Image (cartoon, rainbow, N blue to C red; front, side):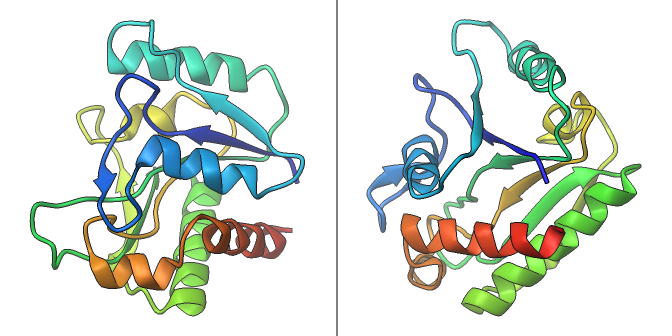
Amino acid sequence: MRIAFVVGHHEKSKGAFSKYFNLFEWDFYKQVLAHMVDVSVFYHNENIGGYTSRIKNTASKINKFPFDLVIELHFNASDNGRANGCETLYYYKSTKGKKYAQLFSDVVASETGIKPRNGGLKPLNDKTDRGFASVYYTTAPTILIEPFFGTNSDDCKKIGGTKNLSLIIEKFISKCN
């Protein structure tokens, strides 16, 4: 199975910050991927103005290859330190995307005890939905993962750090075949 990984956000705008890992999303997932072998990684071009333009540019690069799945890497955050759970986003018309999203949420729950947030799945069906462009413009089924809240102490303990999350992602991938 050929999988493309997209590190969410970019160098100039690194996404949410976790005081428990002392890392932004961007830095956290670069470390997660460093633990993995032989992965195809794509980054959003920070010099392209506008969110949708950046996403379309990244999708255009990914679409040149025959990937079976695209995984965009994020973690969730909230001003409410009690907000918790795993959520996986996918394009609402993608049956494969939904299948992969469910499987990812299930693996996170079984491996960490982190409960699925609102059922664990979030279908994106409107271009104003946060994350819509990321799951829409790629030709391969795409999931946007948010396996934990970086602002929740318990979620961070359960996710166990970058090495452990890389193992969880690898376990998910092994179940996709």
